[in-house]
Image (tube, rainbow, N blue to C red; front, top):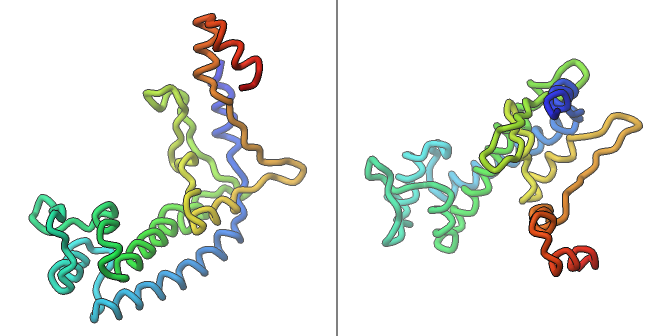
Length: 201
């Protein structure tokens, strides 16, 4: 019964404010260049920040920032994964700059500079929603995944403003309240649990 609805969702797509993303792209690319220069200055040389090998050499060989229990990669070099860099944040201000740089880079390459290329003539973005896409029974979304648009940081949140409603329509956010527990109450016929929900506790 859900398939026709899913097909309509895929065909309908979501309206995108192209200009909003273009403005974000310009702003974020400028910020990325500024961060790149700051990182080079702090490192004392220019290098490819996106190269884990070069970054590792700068941070761990040249600047000697490795912790005693610093994780290593399969090839024996120190890991520059985000989780490993987070451990070093207090050691040197360059680490925070690198983390900021990576966040911006990801937002640009995954969303800001990519979404405009995927829009149809009506500036609508079409994802492929998959009814049986996860083991938990939730829907999945791909090409692109519209279910992981950033929300945690202010930089990421700005991307959400590019998702807009057509004139005369609104975007709604809806969520079931404690749906699994409510189903458990119905199936178990547990009087206390049912009473709790009836009272809105």
